[in-house]
View 1 (cartoon, rainbow, N blue to C red):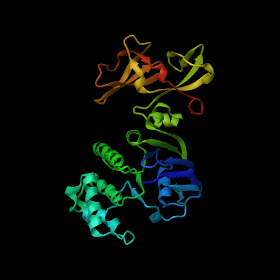
View 2: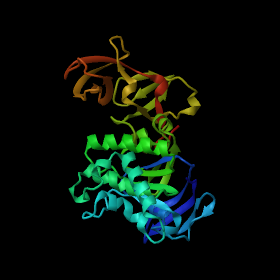
View 3: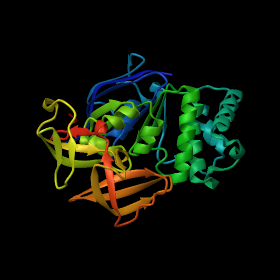
View 4: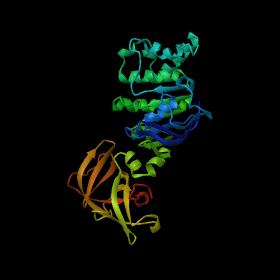
Length: 352
């Protein structure tokens, strides 16, 4: 496979800067995910790497070779899109074989068949090989699209939200398969998504984009446990992180609009007098002898867990509990907040 280096790449469309000085590396065999909302610059970054868009400034290197002026065909990358881009009147076999029959490849039919059959086996679509793609389900068509990338044996796989058109159950199944394929094949992959679950479960490392800028780079645990900004903290994690204004005074953190007073453990110089406090829902834990009291104003039973909405003063806190709980609307509840896992942000939203 290949190592990819982006050095301060920038792309503008008239007055809009879609990618603004982005730099990162994708190591050989890594599954790298670009995460961000619509308009963050994810797809533009992908297209710049593929050569489908031209850089305004910066450099893109594959294994140390500058790619800036090379055509998309010369870069030897394979893309999988959100849309399936298949030929509906061709069979699965012919759709997979199509990119290999290009005069540029000069492959013999025996080699084409070997690659197609191998891809079908990997993706578990061998039984569909003679079926026309017009008669396939959405999940089957996306498998064929992924297969078209696999058969080419490219230097780099680029995937642009390939699971977003699938239903939740199929998306979960194909996500697991994609990760398994990438790990067993050792392929260098750049995967673009707005779905934080896909990013956290699939990535070796995640780059978080906002308005064309890279705001954090790290492994899934780092992105979740040490978000660099409030934006990142809110982007990852379901349910959302609890965010509250707080003031530090005499060794206590006073949470605004609530009776919550949390003993402050740390050097006072590290945290300003006024800050924004983040608490993950799993770090708010019901306890009959808990330090704080509140009232249940909503429960969300999700099977594997239940989300409790706890009213404490004017603040409503989210807490997650494993399985189905005995709490109901209107119940009084006591709880603790895990002090060692508090997140502090300054007034501008940057991590302290």
